[in-house]
Length: 379
Ligand SMILES: NC(=O)c1ccc[n+]([C@@H]2O[C@H](COP(=O)([O-])OP(=O)(O)OC[C@H]3O[C@@H](n4cnc5c(N)ncnc54)[C@H](OP(=O)(O)O)[C@@H]3O)[C@@H](O)[C@H]2O)c1
Ligand SMILES: [Zn+2]
Image (cartoon, rainbow, N blue to C red; front, side):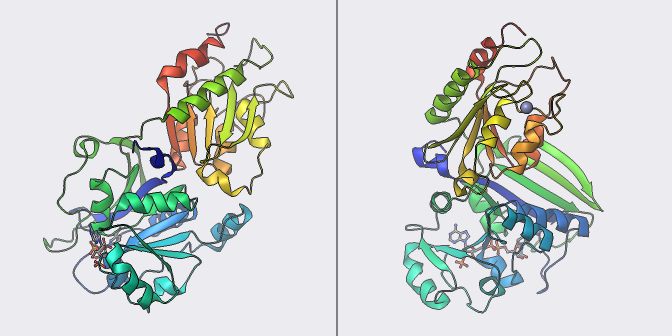
């Protein structure tokens, strides 16, 4: 993810449920239920938090899933945020041979199907308007899929399988996060589908990914891993440096940090900026910038919040900490210069809170010293 277009690619969360012996299905025609009810509810929330959900042709043929947000409350919450009730639903096929009778094409809202260029005409004819059909070049290119989804404003993509599609995204180095639910039983059949197929995985996935969280949902274990972070772009450094300039405008305080925050759309348009105490001694920079945004602005899903300091997870000044305010917004990407030192509140967990909500959070260590220098009287 180093070229310029990569800046607009969505955050990719790969979600899978498997048995203890690593299978994601058995060989019976019926879909194998792996997760607990509590884990199905987590998957429903993940879908509701995504701009798009993606599935492969093999899964569509074998399971005939609808891939919908089931909870009416979650659908209503999306609509209250100015989003469609259902995320964009995305299908991948190599052959273009997808049955127009599948349930996937007859529920929810917008649908798009990606196929190699040579299969586009056949697929478009078969689907006859049930989904937009887009070519990805000579092969089924997952990078081209992400470029196209990013251009449509998709900030968060949830990849829901199956084996071939998981392998395609992982081996291309395009996955930011893996959420793996492990069900407490064995399938015991070498020929049953596995989580992934053989392939050349990127170094970070082949060696050790970062274990970002563990949990129990009923009898199902949940493991969250983050894979290599995309490097910061020159544009990220530029905007973070401007946020540091903004932090110099803060009225001085002996009891609070001077922080600057700027929200920038994916196309480089500045949407809002703010600094600590700009209108009230209790105001934080991120809060000031967020207050100037239109919550229904469709650019927010792919915009970035630049903050000179880690957003607070606890605060004395007001009831809602900045990490919660950011989570409640449509934003899903945060770039920061400096992790909060435990000076005013112990153990800031702003980054963890954002990552748990699926945010891409990037740090820029080379600008940390500049962000700190604005607070030299405190630290
Ligand atoms: N437990 C879980 O969390 C979970 C989730 C989803 C699925 N599943 C299971 O996964 C199984 C299906 O897995 P699967 O691997 O057969 O299907 P899949 O990954 O859903 O889809 C595979 C299809 O995608 C296309 N494709 C993928 N990579 C490609 C490439 N590099 N080049 C060209 N085309 C490519 C091909 O489409 P064409 O065939 O059209 O050429 C291929 O047949 C099912 O048993 C399902 O129940 C389990
Ligand atoms: Zn704050």
